[in-house]
Length: 587
Image 1 (cartoon, rainbow, N blue to C red):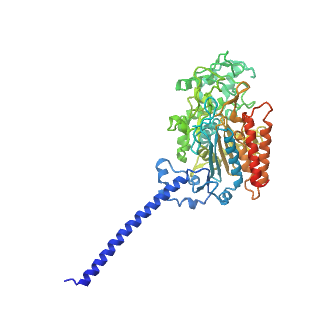
Image 2: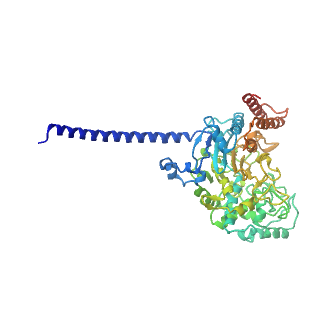
Image 3: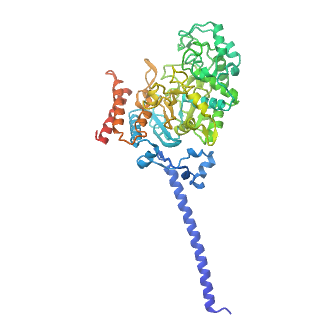
């Protein structure tokens, strides 16, 4: 028989084993609860604004655990390693090391924020900014309202706050992302040469169907000469905006004077193709483009024309067999894991409240323009550009694309690397050819790209930009700027036209938002360049910028303007900023 002492020892051993097992299970459960709480905390942190993204070594990126990334991986393809966001912090909580890593002084970002925030308080609609440096997203922020005003021009209390996911109507920045990128990739792959003719893709009808219109400011060439010019027209000439087309043929408006190309309710537009925003209207518009005579001989002058890129978009679709939206997503956005870039957002899973609104009363300029079929409601999630919407159904080579600033900046960064991951999409030769000056006399133009040239684009790129800086601007208030030498990418998006027309009798295209500093766009790179790669006190340099902004704002005000005029509000905004900066710096 087992002794009492042996039984006691056995009981004690069994008791200890059970106790250890219970404690082990409890410890595991506690560990899992702590991990879950940490993950939730991290997700909550990512919603804070502004965001500063630390430029850390690649080894640190690889230390991300599978648990941290599992939620995102289930929804989208992984971003290339050079675009993964590692750490983030708000400006108020960050330290100087984050800004030192970016090479840009913290004071520059603070001043940019102050300008936009103060303009918003004084009546500017809203904005979004993303900055990349050295292939890293280092800053993202958003301000203001998605829909700042009601149709009657009074402030909208329920406009919704802009965040970093809000989509903006890119307007003409679409030319670059939607068309240039596709063309650059096709040329890199050897599938296209730029000296091919438009008739190779649109057929002989492009020249044969040309009508005779005697433009007021045209060369007065006869019809046979017009047809010869169009038959010889190349893709390169369209990219250089030397294709000969008028700046803005309004195929959607039945009341356009053919000679002047201006709106005239007493005239009949001979190039009218309908405004149904459907496939039938799109095909009728392509036919109207083929009928459109040229304003001048191709290659002899530069006239910025949307028609150039409407045609180039059709060429891309002809070669790829895909519409521009599908082409962009399959070739660029999906491989890069970008989910906030699209044409026609309301048809692709986004709601109106996911988008920043543009014009308050459709395309009427607050009632100044009217025709059957014109939109009269506030435009939110529909492209503002009339030709893109009415003529092309929202997908056109010249306009139509929506994006947030962070995804746009990542797309812009492709012009620095030419790669998605390890895969080359733009060869160095193609990047060089598309961004080089189109001629010694026109250094401010590349192939589609706008260039700084001999300080010719300082309004948008700032005075600190070198001659090789390039990018593009959009009419709704958008900017993409790329500096290869500094490895800098800026995506700055506003919806300045989401505001009343100031005086539709004197200028129906000038909205209240146009009067504010934020709408000028170029103040952002101007300020960033003042505090970039210099280990010095930037107070004096930033004070110079502020003094100039105040002077510009005061110059825009006349004695006849009431206090409610947006120019007056902008002046008061700049004075407040100057006073605050002086108080904070002891100036």
